[in-house]
Length: 474
Image 1 (cartoon, rainbow, N blue to C red):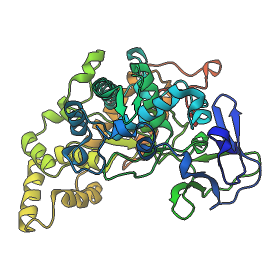
Image 2: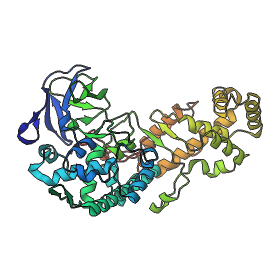
Image 3: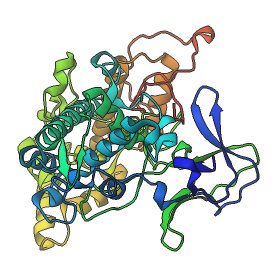
Image 4: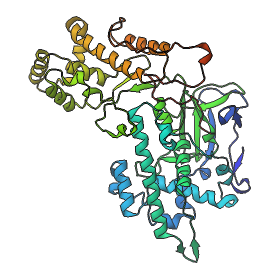
């Protein structure tokens, strides 16, 4: 692909990437020659980029001027995403996501008359990101936090769409000078398609002072699929081109990849609709939410620190107050691929299992230090000395974690071999190689050679249960 747009009026600089169908994965880009680390993979001229700037410069400009004000400092530009969304809904203004989605849909409706017709015609028609999951499909995910994230995003998309439709109904058709701008009001499904395009294919490029105005569609370059490689992106001000650079060498004929980010499978599935087999960034997140929203699916959330074993420890309220004051109580709580628990989780558990004598000693030490030594640093030193000083508390923490993970595994469709591997990694990630005697996993089947499939089975160290792939281009 050497040109995009009408009559090939804008051309790409020479490059060695060729668009190809990858078996079982959709479109990808392969190299026709060897590529060395540090080489520019592709440069895309600024005229071909689709973002809020190109939207304002298009025939939508007069309409957007009525509701999109990127250089005006308002509450919508400085507060959280939900507050920005609320501001959008009530004041009939548009945020960057709505602008870019409208821009994309407006150009799509133009058909062959659009400058971006060739690019838009090659975009996927559907997406696998989690926001598009049905309730039945979402029920297959065994992560309460992911469940809540997806349900929240689904509601956000509906609110964004409703606000955009309201804006269009109020301001179109728009008479501007001697012309009339007609804008087709999209359906919810059309808006969700545009949202999927922006979420899965846009590159980061800061467009205005608005904190969320950083999405740019980069034609052709967005056919590069994801893998755990070293790559970078930049806008070259000298050449006015968006460039993707690889720090990974390739041989002629190889598919070329970029890294969308150092993300675990839960985030990859949420943002891009992909997962990576044996993802080194993956982890299992222990749910500690105090919300009951997950119960709508007839399943109990873990509420890790509110389990009975921890609710009945001595001085529970005092310990919880200390953890909340130190901003540790809400996590993150997770186990990584090696079985290591997050520092926040270990610290909270060790504090909760401390004896009253230890708690008083920590308070005394903290007060004597005049606030220079916090509960977190005190607990860190205690953790370093725990094998010599507190074997009973250490064993309590280990037994608790082992029991929680065993219960989680009992609810998942894993084999005994998979459970044993997970529990072995968990033990290796702690302070001893001896597994606790209690909380043995329930009876499960042994894996049969004939039943092994290509799909990923749920496990306590992964957060998704979808088939693994490194592609999202459909």
